[in-house]
Length: 167
Image (cartoon, rainbow, N blue to C red; front, side, top):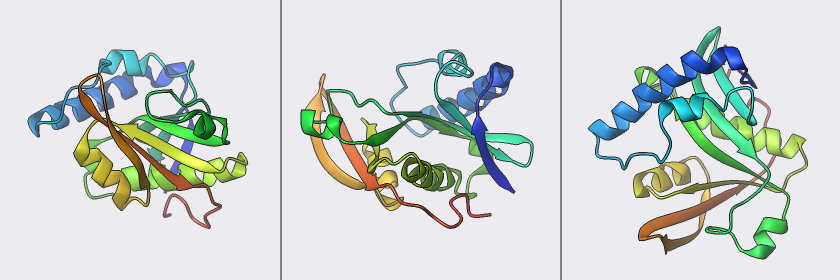
């Protein structure tokens, strides 16, 4: 049974392990490295609006949900709209095929609706992730070059879902 809960300081070590495992998985497949280390992401537990995906008691994913959009991907008008941005989403590569990323995205769509936001948004510099997010129902709003790298801005309407975690 999957559930989501806010990350706490006591989640640091599990988040660091999970993130290090995902970063290795990504590096082995030629993905560009993230600008943060696994420890930097794990240190946000209990301090940032970080959420944990649990399978029973097992931590199997994390994401950060913020209500502020950066200027690189979004217009001034878009930044004024009520939205939630998913960032630093990481799932356990040992649980490949369990649709963990989709579960987190669906939960975020429902969560954003409960928070009265209009949109759930994502940004990535990785074209394969942009395609993956589109498979999760996010529409590509724009693609541009930022600091010499492609930047993909995607969004999906917030809406209440009957079973967002697929339990």
